[in-house]
Image 1 (spheres, helix red, strand yellow):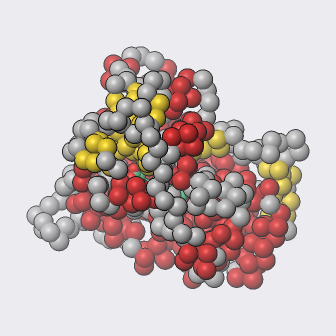
Image 2 (image 1 turned 45 degrees about the horizontal axis):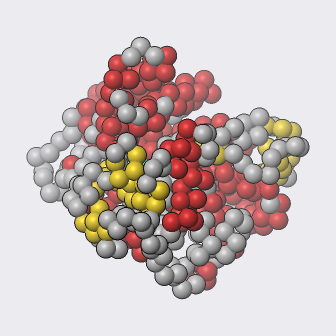
Image 3 (image 1 turned 120 degrees about the horizontal axis):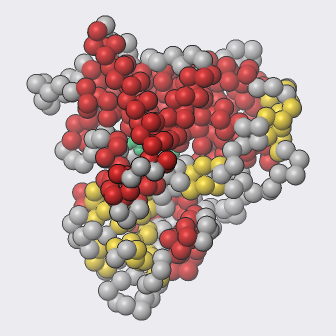
Length: 460
Ligand code: HEM
């Protein structure tokens, strides 16, 4: 499909692109409890590929076309800093990969990267397969109240074991860590509010919950670091790499416990909920499409009958890969990527001022009828090899791109594909009677199913 031309609409004020000059629909959406994903979609439909709004005196530019998205991630990346949320999140996340700026970010990325190399991901395949089978075996036929909780547990076990050699043994422990992560994540929306710094000092129940979550995660992570320092040696995981940190470009550099903590916390948070959300949306889509499930079941049964899948199976599961891709298209867990402009520059003749917020909305571009026929239809056949090779770049960017592209992308694909194939091999999923035809989403920091995921299960 050739790429549709850039659609820049006439604006009233020649200094700014078309848009809504007053109360921005993104925020009015939040106040009226309208889904913010709908608000940004409406903005794109009404105002075209470059939209301008303002909020609290800040200029906001929304980029809705693949050529603008490409420039945003690559050509103009040096003119941006992390978005406002991430900058504020530093108070609590410290200086990890998500929040740090250059040159710290590049050095930390160099040090963490080996844990995500292709050979390492292949080694993680065995853990992923084992954990997916364990979760699948824990389900009971009938109605399961919340498969989303199951997906959170799965993602936590996988990140814990693969990256920190951490065995999360009991269900209670999983719940405790999950609850701590969840409470802690509650801080991020708070960080967006004006007067956030003052709010953090108030003795609010929400703040107390966040601090409790923080204390719990700190104890877990510093405990792991202490244990490793006491028993040094390479266990082939991320934690070993960070502790042994050898930067080829600066051999004298070592990481302090605080820095290792910040990286571990960041990766635990970034790798846990995103993948769980992607899997939950994929399961919901599968439940709506028995034909897709049937094909997936046939593929999985042929590739790994009667055993857990592993990395060697990954390449033999093309249909599972298509299903996971299509779920990431329709429900991208990172539904919008934001940056702050630190050096004024031009986009389509308009000057982007310092301090402006730029957003590249995965949710909007992935559902644009110019780039995907019948965009709201769940159709894994869009992702066959032949179709994929025709598709223009940056029409699909669930893992972003450029120097800040998701470091866990390879792990997420392996996790998504092997897990979906395992569930489809073992179970038939159907919507619970009377459930709505559309899944309600909660566009928090990541896009989540708003009311969990209740599905009926019957064994194959
Ligand atoms: C389906 C699952 C996932 C999705 C959709 C996803 C998506 C993304 C996106 C879009 C970004 C870029 C954010 C930005 O530039 O503002 C990102 C960054 C990041 N992701 Fe993921 N991610 C997933 C899974 C993971 C996993 C499994 C891990 C690690 C275990 C992980 C760790 C990270 C880290 C550390 C960053 C920051 C990278 C940097 O700035 O250098 N993610 N992710």
